[in-house]
Every structure is written in C-alpha cells, then in structure tokens.
Image (cartoon, rainbow, N blue to C red; front, side, top):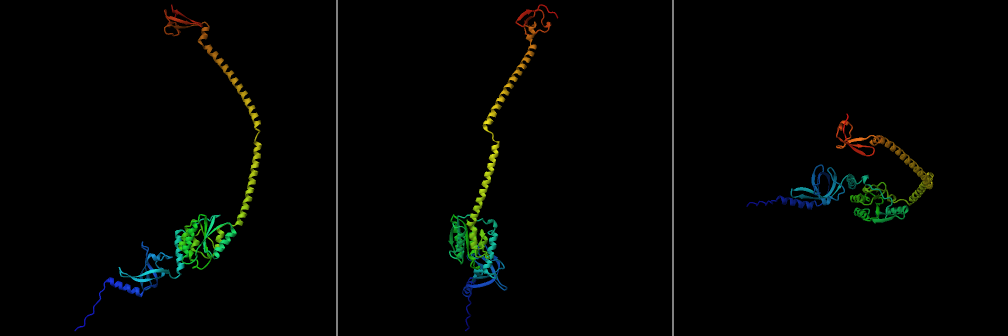
Length: 402
C-alpha cells in the first residue's frame, strides 16, 4: 500500500500578505532605523512619502500628517535621519513599508538642525525684517511682562522699573519658561496681555541657561504670537550671547531682562533733567520773544501820528480842495459862456433873419413854397410871398425881366 501524498496548502495573495503582516507585527513590533532620505514627496493629503536607504538596501517609508505636523524641521532628500516606527505590508501592492511615528536628524543634532530650519522658514516669510519692527512707546500706560513669577528675571525687571519710574504700572502674567508646556503657556500669556487695552508694550523672557533651557523661546508658535502681537514686544531671553527665535522676531531685543526694563520706560532722573532744560529753553525763548515784540511796538510808535492832528490836516485839505473845485467850476462856466456867446454871434451873422434886418426879403412861390432865386422861375402871373424882417406880403408878378 503506497504512502499518501501530503496535502499542499494553497494561499491566496491576500492570505500570504496577511500572514507576512502578522509575522512582522510580532517579530518587528517597533524599531529604530537610521538611513538617508530619498524620493521625498508631500501630496495634498500632507503625509510624507519617502525611501529610507543605506549603501546596500532601501525601504519605503510613510509618515502620516498626524505625526509629521509636530516636526520642528522639514525633511528633504539627502538628509540622514533616525526614525522610530514599525514595519508593515501595504496589502494592496504587497510592498514592505516602514510606518514612521518619530523622526529626528542625525549628525549635527536634532535640536540645532530644527532651529536652523525654522530660522530659514521664518526669514523667508519676512518675520525677521527690520521694516516690520515697531517703535516702543515713550511713555507706556502699562508694561506687560510674561515670565516666571519667581526667579532672577522678574526680580531684575521690577527692580529696574521701580528705580527708573516708580509710578509705572506693571502687569505680570506668570508663565512656565521651560519644558514641553512652556511654548503654549507663553503664547497664551502674549494673547492675554494683548487683551488688556492699557498694555502698550510687552516684555517676554527668562534668565540664562542651556540651549535646552531656552528652547521654548525657539518654538514656532511663540515666534508667530510675537509677530501678531498688538503691542510691541521686547525679548529678553538668557544672556547677551544667547540669541533665540523670539529675539529675532521681537520688535526689540534686549541682551538681559535688566536691559529690557531700561528699554521700555524712561529714567525719572533723565526726565527731570530734560524737563529742567526744556523749562530753561522755554523761558529764554519767551524772554527773547517779548524783547522782539517790545522793540516792534516802540518802532511802530514812531510811525503812528496823533489822530486829531491827522483830522485837522484832513479838514484843511478838504477846504483847499473845495476852494480849488469852486474856482475851477467858476472858470469853466465863464469859458463856456464866452464860447456860447462867440458861437451865437457867428450864428447870428449867417442867419437869414439878420439879412432881412438889413432890408432884404425872401421871395417864395405860393404854390410850392420854393424860394425864388431866378426871375425866370417866376413868370408874369406867378403868385409869390415876400418875407420881410417883420411880417409877410403876397403879390402877383406882372412882368419879369431876365
């Protein structure tokens, strides 16, 4: 009797990929992998897709948006990184894939690289530009301070403010200045202080420390909160050698919290000197102005005449003009009469009536009243009228001699 052949288990492709997935989940649950990024791309979904490779092999990787949106840097081709994740099978294509949950640069240090990457992005957006820096108010109604409620920073700031301007109003918004929760707390403090209308300037900062201690002030959320602040912001983080993102975005950077306090309020002693100097300058200017006006009044007095004397002069002038006008009118009347008399005599000399006075007559035909200048125009039997110097006579021509 022959031995029975063993049964062969036949799997579908889906069953095979599921078995591989199950094995991987048990054997390689979570792992840390170092490699170089290549073929990096970001589709509209916001997920990161890339390959992670070394000299001999490569594996496809994906970092979903929920994980990559908290990265402080932007991955790119050629960057060497250390990632944490788990290996799985993308069942649709049967591809081996590394699902990344955490990523950090390798080499110069994750924090430093993230800081440089954030600087580049904010610089490209113009958040460091001098043109967007606002001037600090010379006399703020209230100074808002966002820092730790205890510690050297707040003590130094309050001490300097009291020395420079004791009456200055100060509003402290205590915040955590380091740790994972510090950036969100600083952002909330800036927002809270901006909601107080009297706050005209805000100081944010802390004392010195390591890069890790100051890291909250390198957070992108803090940078954008400073950039969008209603009131100008003075950043006073660490010591003079420490420069954070907050320092670069703020309207003014102070090397220390003490220097920040000196920036935001004037010194009462300097104000007293300035007021005294201005008072002296004002008094001197007023004295000079009074002397100029006094000299001007004296000069004007020399040119002002007594109105009564001026009135008397005007009266004499009016009398003279009246007499001159009367003489002129009389002369004009006399000359007009003489001209009239001469014209009258000339008219009288050529008047027909004057001729009649010398015994002459004017003969007119009765029929048409025409003047008879030629005897031929008045033949025998013509009725004529004779005009004398006084009166007229009618006659009939009996004979004409031509």
